Each structure stands twice: as structure tokens, then as C-alpha cells.
Length: 238
Image 1: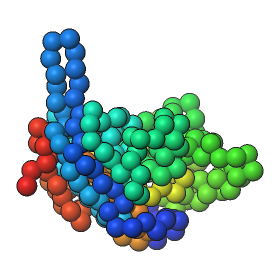
Image 2 (image 1 turned 45 degrees about the vertical axis):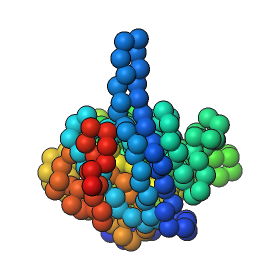
Image 3 (image 1 turned 90 degrees about the horizontal axis):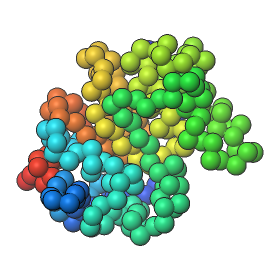
Image 4 (image 1 turned 45 degrees about the horizontal axis):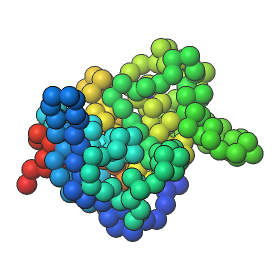
């Protein structure tokens, strides 16, 4: 059971905390060029729940990875709190990924040899040693709030799909990010667990003002967001 009224610390940012300006992404080999994103322009407000909907191959995941500084655009700018992510050095981008953004993926990406608590703690290990006790206490509190207090010492293989995704969300929240980037977060779950995860994401957004960007091919899932934009063949529609 997912507990309600999560108490998470967020930060105050101006409207349009995230802006994407004419972003293109191409992959090249010796004989051809594949244009995955074609001049994307988009603004996301602080506290917004945005869904990016489109069919497989539309460029949704590529766009999400660029927003989270996981993949560099071929051209264009990504501004977060006024700073261009891709004018930063790699170490600064790594710090951004660790401290400002949380990632939730379809296939969880949990480390199988670590238990639930250890998986949640991983992003917090960059903290100084004297902060780690606080991080550990916060990790335990997150697991309790997400209904996993009796699963802290369990390995991922001992958890259900819904529990693994809640664990992945706890890990994404450990450094109190300003934005959660969710890539088909219910795509590997049955319908009941999928509804629970969507309910949890909506709760985090509405109660705690965590900015949420979710990509999906499913219009029913996208309908949970405040705003839906459509991506097809690397271009935004409408």
C-alpha cells in the first residue's frame, strides 16, 4: 500500500524552469544520417505535470535523455533555471544529473546485488561522509512512505514489479530533485500496479510540486498530466 501525503523538500524556481530551444539530434554513420529530433521548442513551468506522447520511434526517450543531460543534442539549447546545460563541463552536468533531476525508467535499472535500501542510497553516495547518515535516514523514510518499510533488506528479485518501480521512484527522490523524468514508468507493469504508480506520481506533483515530465505512447496514461504534447517523427505536432 502506498502511503499518502509524502513530505518532500523541493526548491522555488521561476516559471519556465526548463526551456528547450530548437533542439535537434542526429545520428550519423558513413553512408546516412538519421534525424531523431527536428527543431524541438518547448517550455516547462515549475510544478507542471507534462506528458510527451507519441508512437514508438518518435524520439520521446531521446528527448527525455537530452532534458536530463544524459545525451547531448546535435544543436540547440537546453536551459535549466536559466543555464544552458550543454555549455557546462561534463563534471558539472554529472552533478546536475545527480542533484537536480530524478530518473524513473520502464525497466527499473535496479542493481540486483544490492538490497532495496542500498539501491535507494546509491545516488546519495556523492554526499560528504558527514551527510551520509542524514541521507540514510531519509532513504528509510522514503521507503516507509512508499509502502516498502518491510522490504528494505530485500533484493530486487524478491520484489514485485510494482514494488520495484516504487523502489526506483524512491531512488530518484533521494537527492530531492526539482524534476522527475519518467520514461514509460508503467510500461513494464500490470494495469493495477500501473494505476498505483500513476497515482503516486500525481501525488508527488500536486502535493509536493515536483515537476514531472513523463513520456508514453498511451493516451490514457498521458491524460493524467496537466498538459499533453505530441511527438511524431522527431517533431512536435500542433
